[in-house]
Length: 221
Length: 139
Image (cartoon, rainbow over all chains, first blue to last red; front, side):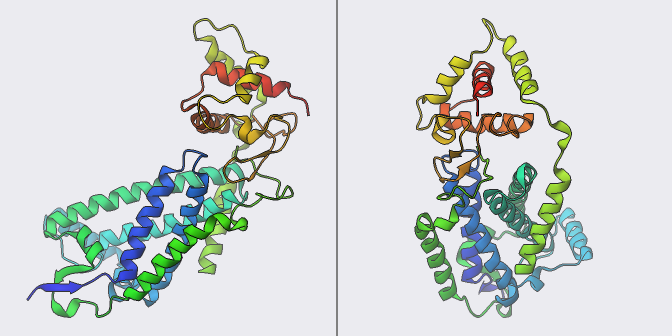
């Protein structure tokens, strides 16, 4: 009765792995001025990806939709209890606890990206710079918890969740699958991101104050 | 999306405003004194030298950049980020009163920039020499 069904559409998967790349890359380039341009480029990419994800949360396929992982506190507690008993309830899409990590990652991602852009544009001063570091570290913490959750959930349910996020497939009842993968949209996303990366160095506006003295106020030493 | 962006911006500004703590504001001399105290504990310490600080500031230390790559040869002048080309406000207190008034910020940027320029942290001697130099630069 259980069979291979499509759960994650292509845009959701492309979003996930590009977000991984952007976040890890931005984190690794954060402590030096040498890669400041790459850090900023990846920050903009992260914001763009999340902007897409917010839309896809309304217009995407079943499990990508926000309403599929908008759980009530009671459901989250019930899931935690079932987890503590070693018999966690199985969800085809995000489970209630996993969804908390997803919401946090979206919120922290937006906060990190927006505060980063503001720091780069010289709005907000030192306090905002500290806030940018704080929310980015918070995001790293949630990423690590998310990975731990994926490992635990994969072991407990004997299903490879990482592979599912790559192939899109899971093992479940036939009627639980999504019908369309929207591969074309995933291809467009990849193309847009690659074009942005390729074209970024020539976008003068991306580096405020680069060619003008009136921009003033910058003190990123 | 725009609403979310704006709400986030407002929230961030609000939090940033609350987080701004004028409490730890110090004078450049107090910050130099703290570094002096740290350096005095190292063997053979004989005080800071503005001349040594100037040469440290203007020369490369085995890496692509010197301090002056971004801050220019004149610390009282507006600098330019060596990577992004962004404006860097003058680093000398004579030209920029905000400089060296926040110990946490001084520590943070010494850590970042020394890593880029020397591939390691700066010693208290190097920091003190540099500040001794920067504090003598007239506008």
